[in-house]
Structure formats: structure tokens, C-alpha cells
Image 1 (spheres, protein in one colour):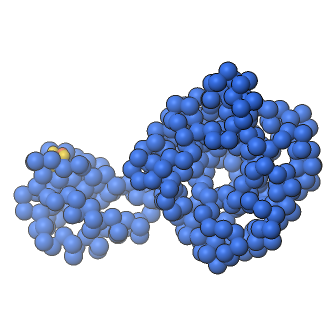
Image 2: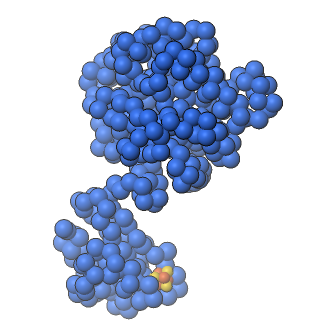
Image 3: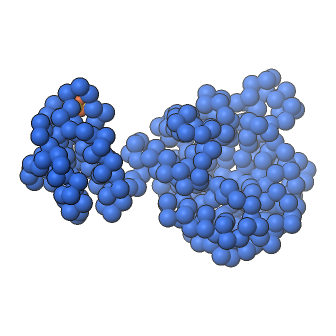
Length: 346
Ligand code: SF4
């Protein structure tokens, strides 16, 4: 979003003036070809622009090759511990790899850098709070955010010293303040390079979404972040959906419909929760960026409903519908379920 440099992975540009990208991670072992490809398809449908795939063992390299040859989704190999895995991933067709500075020895990266240069591979240096070494923590005097930053810096400096600049920088932690601080340090010291942001191990459900959103939104509002992943203990498509919702809420990128609906209160004239349940499935047929307002009464309802492309404002007996700000009829509540599918069309 704010980086001066950009990188290109297959046809995907990250950084510079490119929109903030939304990523996820495959959650199925690579040797389950059909399941993995089906997950990739679902991710593509959800708008996912790149997915990481773990390559935990060399025996899965042929499966990774199969995947890169059979999916349109851009794949970044996720590599830990062993530089041979990084080389195998690149030779299997991955045009992006993530290496972890917490567990990848600096003195063994020369061949990785040479192969990446030869094959035009982007390297993400991805530090993680769960794998920073004791040495890195000691160097940072116990400051975990600083340790994450130092871990990224060590690898970045090595790669830059060998004129390797196709880099994405990333540091993740499961603590929101720690993660924000580590990313601020990276952005301050390496403003030119694209950054991947996210909170790791955020957990499931509402708690996970809130933690991930708190971290990612804070960084994006400071201009930090060129690509993101909302890590959730959930299906990867959910991660992508939440990622786009964050970008939409921050007005950085529009995907899907902007549904405005009131929380309802004792003043409500219409059952907004029930109405929203009827309206939501109809929204996927509308173009990106269209706004639909569902309001419970005459207090805020008509005004919000008028501003939206489509508005539904509750009245004592049902609702007034608005299209482009103009009233489009008043209907009884019991008739709305039938009328709305026809009304919500562009
Ligand atoms: S629009 Fe009406 S029903 Fe909805 S929260 Fe506001 S006052 Fe309550």
C-alpha cells in the first residue's frame, strides 16, 4: 500500500500502488490432491489472491509441483528449518517462498538466494513470535517485538548484501500490541519494501476475528501493509472473507456489497434481524460496492435508506423501499420476503 518497491509473483503485484492483497493458507496436506485443488477453487471463488502451502518434507515436493501445475491460485511455499525445502519448492514451480528467520540458519541461505535469483522467486522473510530463538530474544533484551524485528533484519540484511531485493517482510505474533510494535519497527527501518501483515494464532470465532482485525486495522490505518492474512481456526475462505471485510470497513478496497443495517432497539418497527437474513443471500448477485441499508424505524431509517442504492426502512406495518434514494413503495411485512428478490436487482 505504501511501499516504494513492488514485487510480482506470477501475475500478482504486491506493494507500490497495488491494492492491499488478501491471502490465506491451505489447510490440507499436499498429497491429498483432489481436496487441495478443491480448497484452492473455493479460495479463488472467495477472492483469495495468494495462498501459502506448507512444505514440511521433501517427499511432498512432487505434490507441490502437481499443485502449482493444476491451480490458478498463486502459491507461496511455507518453509521452515531446512534450506533444501526452499530450493525444492522453487524447483516445484513456486514463484514465492516464505522463510522463517527464527529457524533458518543464515549461513545456509546462499543456495536459496542463488536459486531464487535464477528462477525469479520472491522471498518473504516471515518471523513468528512462536519461533524466535533465545539468541534473538537475548539480543533484544527480552523485548519480543524488538526480537521479531531483529530476526527480520538479520535475514533482510543478508539478502540485500547479495543484491536480492524481491522481498516481502513480515513479523507476526499472537499478541496484538507486540505484533503492531514489531511491524512498526520494520516499516520504519525498511519503508521501501512490501509488507505482509497479520496476527498469528488468533484463534476461532468472534475472538479470533476481533484480535486479527484490531491488529491489521491498526497497521493499515498507519499505512503499513501491502498484503494480509487473517489467521483463524476456521476454513481459509472465512479468513479471506474477513480480510475483505476489514479492507471494506477501512474504505481501502471494495469487494462485495456494503450492507448497512441498524442494531435495532426498542423503537424498531420491523424485525431487522429477520429482514437481514432474507436480504443477505440476495446480495451476492449485486455488483461490488453497492450499498444496501436495512433500518428498523423512522428515526435513522429513511435517511440511511435514501443514501444507499437500495434501502429498506421499517414502518409500523412493514417497510418503505427506496431505490437510488427515491421511495419505491411501501409493503406489508409479510409481503417483503416475496418482493425483495425482485427489488434487489440492478
Ligand atoms: S434505526 Fe430505529 S430501530 Fe434501528 S437502532 Fe436506530 S432507532 Fe433503533
